[in-house]
Every structure is written in C-alpha cells, then in structure tokens.
Length: 164
Image (cartoon, rainbow, N blue to C red; front, side, top):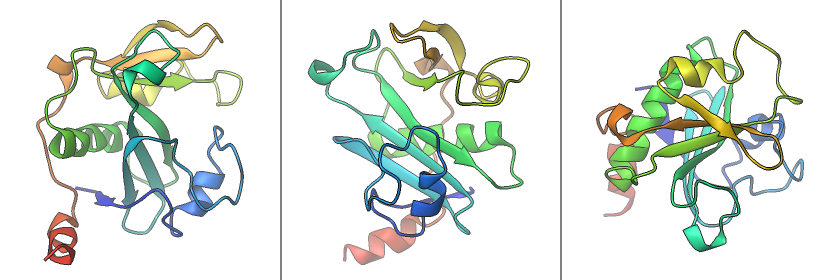
C-alpha cells in the first residue's frame, strides 16, 4: 500500500495540491472541498488523492450521491492506475461499500495533457467514460461492482494509536 492517511490541511500536501489544475486558491491552508473527505498522501508526498462524499442535496451535477475523486496528482514513479485502485480500496475501507452510483471524477480536457483517451489512468484503473457535465468536463465512473476490496492505508495503525 502506497497511501497514508492525511488531512485537508496537511502542510506536506500543500505543494502538490497547489500544482493540481483545479486548485482554487494557491497557497491556502486547506485544499479540499467542504464536506466529508478522505485525504491520502504517499510517504514522501509525491502523490495526493482526495475522495469527497458530498451531500446529494448540494450537488449540481447528474451524479448526486456518488463518491467523488476531487483531486488526484501523481508526481511519483508509481503507475497512476495502481495508485487510483489503491485509493479506491482505502476509500472503501474508510466508508464501507460504495453508493449505488459508485465513484466519479471529472476531467477538464483544457487543463490536462492529451493522451490517447482523456483520463487514461482512470480508465486503466476500471473507470468508464459516462459522458460530460453541462460545463463540458469529461465524467468517468467506477461502478460499485468494479471497486477493489477494502484495504487500509499504510499508516492506519499509527493513526489508531493517536486515538488511544
């Protein structure tokens, strides 16, 4: 497991969060949207993942109720598709079985490098292209049946000791 539990204002994650294209306010101490979240960071802070679980009543896209990958940036040598699968496994470990609609992520094709397919690393991790938002973002979804088995992050024992 390459991921460790982190939090929405982890100073180690700020530099990589600031380099993600969806960053709203560069340098702000928090880099996660409001609501329920799971923040993962690799040990040397060269990859960042954020799972969000927004309350359906506040969602404006067609996939209300879904878990959302609101941030993924990989500057490590680890395959992005492997990190995505692991992050989905940790999300399931933390929150239980995924909602009926699964998990979605949105790709702004104007802000990422073009590859053969938009969101190629997500597609290799089992996500499927399910259309676009009204604003034109490509929407990729991981269905509940395609989720990996739950798996804890590498530092979950350390985190549970802090609670004792």
